[in-house]
Image (cartoon, rainbow, N blue to C red; front, side, top):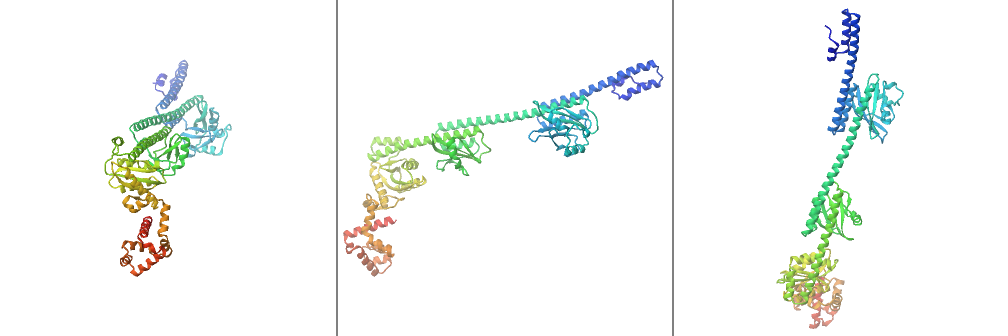
Amino acid sequence: MSRSFLDLLYDQAPRSAFDDVVADAERAGASEAELAELRREYDVATRLRELIARQQAREAELTALYDTASDLTAIRDVDAILAAIVRRARQLLNADMTYLSLNDETEGASYMKVTDGALTPEFKELRLPLGTGLLGLVAQTGAPYFTPDYQSDERFVHRGYIDEAVAGERIRAILGVPLVVDDQVIGALLAVHRTVRPFPPAEVSLLTSFAAHAAVALQNARLFAELDQANRTMTEHTVAVESAARAHDRLTDLLLHGGGVVEVAGVLADELSGRLAVHDPDGDLIAGEAAPGEWDRAVAESVTSGRSVRLDDSYVVAALAGTEHVATLVLHDVAGSLGLAERRTLERGAMVTALVLLFARTVAETENRLGGELLSDLFDGKAGDPALRQRARRQHVVLEPPLAVAVAATEGIDRYGSIRALARLAGDGRGLVGEYHGTVVILVCADDPRVVGEEVRSALERAGGRATVGVAAASPDDLRPAYDEARRCLDTLVTLGRSGEVSDPAGLGLARLLLGDNGPEELAGFLESTLGPVLAYDDARGSELVATLEAWFATGGRLKETGARLHVHPNTVSQRLGRIGELLGADWRDPARSLDVQLALRVHRLRAR
């Protein structure tokens, strides 16, 4: 028994099954009236079948578009979304291949972004100048185009390499629709068949819908990228602001608690994730880790601009007190480049460094002024005065034995620099340093004045100067005699030309008493008038008359012992003494004259030393 048209519609039977119902009725000998009614039902059933097919196709299209819309909200990978769009468009249009191209405005071309169903790698790499081929025309004009047979369609600009690629894919029919974002054509979506066929309006509409979704996906990708960048920028800015605030708090706390340049360098190095060096205006390292490279080339620019200067992998910023350059900060070995907020943190660190250095300078100047005043009062008055002792206690100065006084004459460094260089030595020795009567004077607790003198000389040499130092032990009840002794030692060293040396009274002997108030010119004149001919004779002939004189006086004028000391025969000694008599005069052995000769020999030996 034949099935009814309703059964066939329900079972989604093929068209031939509907034809079989009419044929079976004709073979069964149905009347004309029955056949006419059956053909009318047949027409209705086939129309219903076509309508159902169209509805099912439309449902599939809507489902695909809905899935694509879902992808747009769920998937952030634009390449994955575009691949899904191209794949679904191929499935719904029953196309042999679909592909999506994007425009490159700088080159004036459209290039393949995604393909589905391509046979050759050459086609996937194809770039079409705008206006050439069907794709180039769609990408240029923003209007949909289609052709049932591209190879024979003369409406399009054909290029040899394009036609070869099309032939390699065996493409015949092509449908292309534009991708439009904000009224700007950014590419095209195309579907092709490898047979000659037309494209009905429904397929054009469907591909246009997919193109719209692809455009939305590309727009979303751009917006997501901008959003991600904005989020990264905001996050970086937030981190930088938090870091700057934290650094500000730490630097403020450091200032309030009396921190120094070393602590400032530590905070900045920690907050900026690098290594920091602090140099004085001359380039000497004050704190931190020395920076490699020629960073000093950027100092002048930073001083002029008041900002940090990037130099290779380092950042250089000058610490300024008004217009005075007090230090240079060099941040090096940084993990990455510094943002604007981080560079401002470095610049604020330079300001704090300048404040710390100015504060330290002010404190030092105040201490030096007060210390210098107290030092002058102690030397001018009585150290045992209760009022002076009370002032000394307030400045943490100990006036108890043993005490030592050192008086220094300096070269290559001014007196303020000398006092600053000796401040730590004075502090460690619980004493004072200052200027007194034109010289730098230090009073400290010490057992050995010569050790103090050597420490003074070393400290001034480290500060870039050169010092000649006279020292003496001091009584806590009366300091002025000790200063006078040390000053006489200094003057004697200067008179003897022995700059850069340290001596106490014992180191100079009789010369200190006789030469303390004489200058180098008077001393040179005394040597020349007393011993000059003998010195000139030795210099000219390489003889040893001076050594003979010294040995003769040392042995009490005994020829044999003098010869033994000089390792020569007594006759040789007699001959030399005769020569000396010729040079100095016969009276050189007289008591008054011999004292001058002995003193001249001693001064000569001291000067030579």
